[in-house]
Image (cartoon, rainbow, N blue to C red; front, side):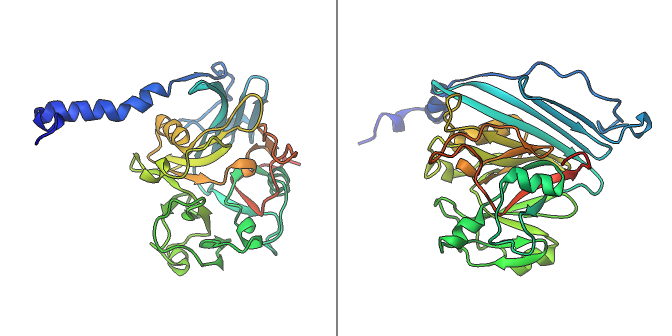
Amino acid sequence: MQNAFSRLPRRLLACLLLLLSLAPLARATLTQQGPPLFTSYPRLDAEGFLDTGGGQSEFVYQDAEEGRWVYVSPSLRVEIERFSGSFEKRKLVWFIAHIHFRGEEAFRAFSANPKRPSHAQARPGQIAKQNQVVYAQNGDLFSWRVYNKQTIGLIIRDGKILHQKTYNRPRALVPPLDELALFPDGHIEMRTPGQLTAQDYLDRGATDVLAFGPILFRGRVVDERLNQSFTHREPRSALGVVGPGHFVGILVEGRNERSVGANLQFVAQRLLEEGCYEAFTLDGGQTAAMLFMGEQVMDPGIYNGFQQARKQQDIIGIGFSENIN
């Protein structure tokens, strides 16, 4: 015997199913407030970078109370905004960073100690300062998996293969060991394990490959694994791509009074709203960090009695400034 759905006209049935699929999103209401409009830019060129005729080598603006951080040079523009609001009736604070770059600028990994890339660790702010990195986020904390003798994933740093043992298909584990490859021309590539070997990445010219994930979305299609193992409210860190030379970083605070953290569906939706067509999850929890001119912009929350971003083997970042010390 046919059920009630099967007797409906096909077009009406499709509309009904669409409404049902959107119902959870309708319940997940978001309110948000960001900083006021910024109007104090220096003289910019036609592409939005610092005009070299103005006599400045870089422009830096930071106001933690307002929730805005701005850096502009002839080849790099970073704009970070802090948002606060309520999602599913819980308080949240998150940061959105638009990173525009050109020329020889590119994201890369910066190690706590390049001579011991799998073992040496430091606070992310310390790594950023010692390398004078303008903008950075945490990476994949693969050293934790080294110390705990877990599957490490495919890891390349500075053109050298450090680890290769990984999965052979997409997984919904935490972490699934999806791969983020950084290239010297500024582009990045995202894959699930087993698609390329470490040597394949080197042959393609990758300088660094991180293993964490999951990939949030590709071609603006959200990965189906986000509904399986990544639904808890936690501090989150991720990186998305709008287009060549335009990335978007996101950091969601958690484990503090003003923010409970978020699931990966929330992170993916924010990056889609910012115009990204693909995005990748970096390590979260107490590893999550966003840094501007060597300083954390976020409150890392409290975990096991500690109120700092944990020590890690490296960060990923872009830009160099002699004014960071």
